[in-house]
Structure formats: C-alpha cells, structure tokens
Length: 144
Image 1 (spheres, rainbow, N blue to C red):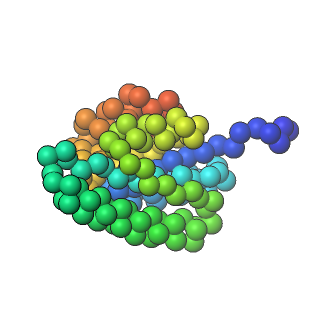
Image 2 (image 1 turned 180 degrees about the horizontal axis):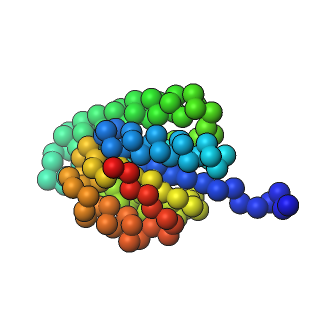
C-alpha cells in the first residue's frame, strides 16, 4: 500500500443553524466510518455595501465572534467523537467561498444543511445550495 496516497477528506458547512448542526452530526458519523479528516467551515458573509463603515465593522465583529463560538462548540463535539478535525472561518459569499474552500483543500465530500441561519444556505433549499451542488468539484450531501 502506498503511504503517500491522499487521505479522504470531508468538509461540512456550519453556520449555527439547526440544519447545519444536523449536517455536522452526519459529517462526524461519516468521518468516523472513513477514519478521515473533517474540515468544519463557517462562512463570514460580507456586510452589505450600503451600510456605514461603523455598521460594517460592528456587523463583521459580531459575525466573527458568533462564528468563533460556533466553531469552538463544533470542535468539542467532533473531538468528543474522536474525529480528527480542522476548523476554518472564511470570509466571502457563502456558495462561492465554500466551493473555493473545497477546491483549495481537495475535499472529497461536502456536507451542508438544507436550510441555514442566514443567507448562507438560503431560506429554502434553492439558490445557494443549487450553486454549491453545481460548482463544487466533489460530491455534495445535503442533510435535512
């Protein structure tokens, strides 16, 4: 067996919504079965350009702080399950940033929830999820 073979890697999009936590549980289950690395990725969406500079800074700080708390909770949950993990908070538009992350990190499977907190997965399984499925270079599992 070639020890240089690439290890299977999974990523899960986590925004703190109920469906993203379900996606994390599914990702942990699959990562445990495959004995692989799990990337937990949260997207810090950029504030609207119409906001004032102080509103943008406040929104970005709040979003960063909330995502950090979500990431800490997710890390503990995954580590308690015995899963090797990597956590990341990426700035950008949800579908684009998540697809870019998957490409850059050579992810084999991306797992997302069907309905997110904000526009991260869209209010309904639709635009963002459709874009993710269309443009991700790997398989995508949408958890309901």
